[in-house]
Length: 195
Image (tube, rainbow, N blue to C red; front, side, top):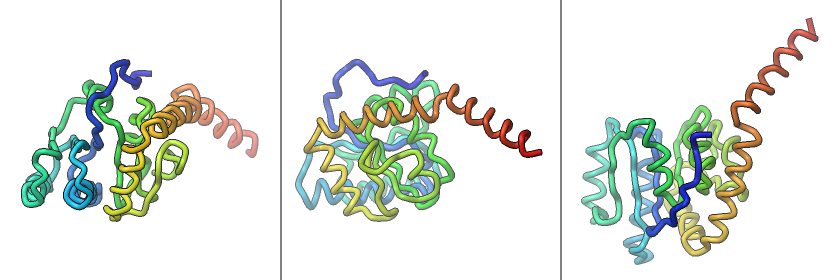
């Protein structure tokens, strides 16, 4: 398994995502949640890391500046796939609050690194992120609830750690290569036996 938890302690509490910066990927929702946490709740110890490129990158940078969040929100740009694990291991919480999602591979990758996830309850995301087990499922486009769930993890690191561990166990059990091959073989066997 190339996805693993870093042995080093995280110094900052960092909330992040690895997504293309397009309208359906919920990047704006994450920035709005950062605004609530920093400007409304006055919490300045949480950092936000957005990894990816896309059509809305400039717009999201402008929004961040307008909301005076440049000290809190960092745009990393696109990173090569071999560096994804390194960046995942900088995160305390992984966010994927898309308005549409086919499956959610990035969520599985984060879970495999023992990072608790907050995802929207659309498409395949409820399959890869189990609510109250590996993280939280919330409605898409709800920055207030996203901010609240981030703060739950910020205030309770032990809970975050436990959910991260459950997420990794679940990925290894249900989504590893061996597990996927077994499921695929069973599908073929079932299909052949019904002929």
